[in-house]
Amino acid sequence: MCRLSFKSLTFMLLIAFLVWSSSIETCIARRGKHWRQSRLTAASISKKKGKGHGNHNYHKGGSKPKAPSHKTPPSPKPKAPPSPLPKEEVPPTPPPPKGYRSGQHSDVFDVLDFGAKGDGKTDDTKAFQAAWAAACKVEASTVVVPAEFVFLVGPISFSGPYCEANIVFQLDGTIIAPTDSQPWGKGFLQWLEFSKLRGITVQGKGIIDGRGSGWWQDAPYEDPYDDERKLIIPLNSTVQEVPPMPVRNELSGKMPSIKPTALRFYGSFNVTVTGITIQNSPQCHLKFDNCMGVVVHDMTVSSPGDSPNTDGIHLQNSKDVLIHGSNLACGDDCVSIQTGCSNVYIHNVNCGPGHGISIGSLGKDNTKACVSNITVRDIIMQNTMNGVRIKTWQGGSGSVQGVLFSNIQVSEVQLPIVIDQYYCDKRACKNETAAVALSGITYEKIRGTYTVKPVHLACSDSLPCIGVTLSSIELKPLQERYHLYDPFCWQSFGELTTPTVPPISCLQIGKPSNNRVQSDHDVC
Image 1 (tube, rainbow, N blue to C red):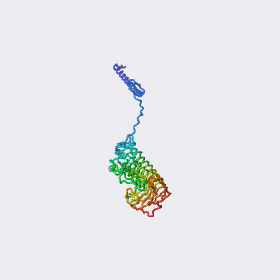
Image 2 (tube, rainbow, N blue to C red):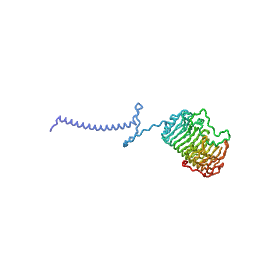
Image 3 (spheres, rainbow, N blue to C red):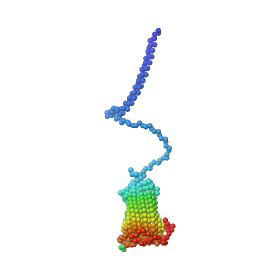
Image 4 (cartoon, helix red, strand yellow):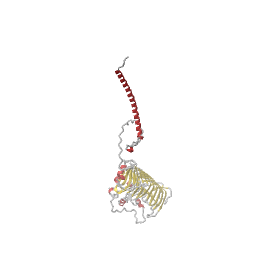
């Protein structure tokens, strides 16, 4: 048998040892891998718990741990929408106009924010112009004239036609006119004017004060006077029938001869005036010229009864007019209705002092006049010269038709019912045959007291009045300073539908036999 040598045995043992060592390392390596994973997992859990339950050692100088997080895991991002098609660039929004107050609506423009002082001495005309210019650009904007301020404003026009619609002029303060001649230059026909606007409202509790006494004292000798004075004969011979023109004082020539209207609206649609007071105007207080859709209510006109030519409300070439709930006291007609007016309705108005409510004067300087569809009712007149009146000049043409005066209460009125087709506000006028034609004139429920003559109907010789109706007339005399007269009628035709007090027997019943037919020149 062969015996292994020592070298061979040693070599075999070395091989066996190497194989055994390799098996042990593989096992240890596997155990180490699992141990590392276990330690990592345990460390992760320990770290999460440590955030809320770890050792709170920040009182001993450690850093304060963060509050536990309760954030919801973020949702997956939505897919981006497809890119929109390219659009035109939109210009940036312009900054608000000058005059806005912090927290104020962007459509309100206070004149104080545009530099007005409101101290009654500083000229605030430019501030009013600037406020209007800003408001003009904004539809349904409001210009504010605040209460408890007095604003000195010269002649100014708040005008379109490029202004936005439905602007409100909120007047709660007082606007006063200059009393020196410099701002007036050679003269203006109006002081405050709103022209060529669509939807304009002047409202509030404020005052427009024309401070017109200087103009009245300086009245030119050629200023017209009311021709009905010729009918008023005083009992005392020392009282003059026609008062003299004002005596010139040291202010003579101070103001221009052209006297302005205080507030005028021209060429505008949908005009409203309410709440305000207009006082002491140099001439007419409130005028509407070439306007359509006018509403005046709950406003006041106030001037002395002897202030010359200071009509309360003057209408000319205006249609669809409503006036009601107002107090009108002035030195001329409370309401004057001129040529070009139609669809006028006046009711619940107090008139006095003044010269009553008049249609006319019409046809001056041989002009054509057209007036139709006029209603005046539910009126109180106190201490006025006239009640309800129509006055036309000789030589005119055109017509007045469709007029109703109803429920007029008169108290100490000199001439309650007047038609005068021989009107003349000068010292002398020539006789002419042409005349404005009058037809369809109704007077009903005219009641109260008169101090001169109850009825004066003086119609044209060549073109008599036709269709004059008198109903429920009850007028009683009140002897004061003047001679009393019976009713007077001339070339007046129509009917009496009820007995009257006093009897008005002078009205001719029916139609004239030789009534001249209107020519094309006369027809409106």
